[in-house]
Amino acid sequence: DPRGSAVLREVVAGYARRVRAAAADPEHIVICSGYAQGLSLTLAALARGGVRRVAYEDPGSPASVRAAAAAAGLEAVPVPVDEQGIDVGALTATGARAVVVTPAHQWPTGVVLGPERRLALIAWAAAQDAVVIEDDYDAEFRYDREPVGALQGLAADRVVSISTVSKSLAPALRIGWLLCPPALADVLVSVKHISDRGSPVLDQLAL
Image (cartoon, rainbow, N blue to C red; front, side, top):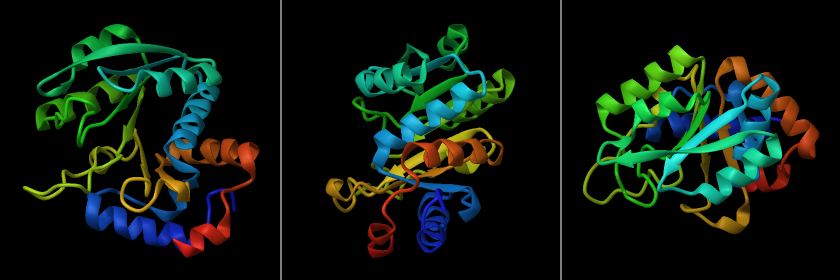
């Protein structure tokens, strides 16, 4: 199954629901080889659906987004971040139909996307028929409060959430997962199958 081990997807779904307050369905989870592949698969799938421009946080991680966007044939555009997170008004002005965000712990500023801004971002996605790509890279690491819930849990039909075990276990394991909107799941599975026919199953079962 290009989606990955059914056993691991069940475990990931339970974990994501319990720890990240995500709306996780094992049928709509795709196991991938870390964040970089997850982002590349997502952008390739969106390009198939007619998306031509993806936005990213500024400051942020432009090199990885630009490289993945270029490989998918997309234009990547920066959007400023303030003390509440990404500026949704500036995002709207870009005309992008996808955006990559780090809502739980913005990199590098450390800002948490505020509640009002989260709702505004979801409203933007609905109004623009757009997709939010949530880089959930280190949300478990909180020492002064409970982890912030995943954005995906508020809008499972509009958010692709990408998580990995790179920070929590070992980057060398190269295992991550995508929580996919139902409408995007089939094309993401198709892109994954074409890419590598599926991530190593023995590694998944070990994890």
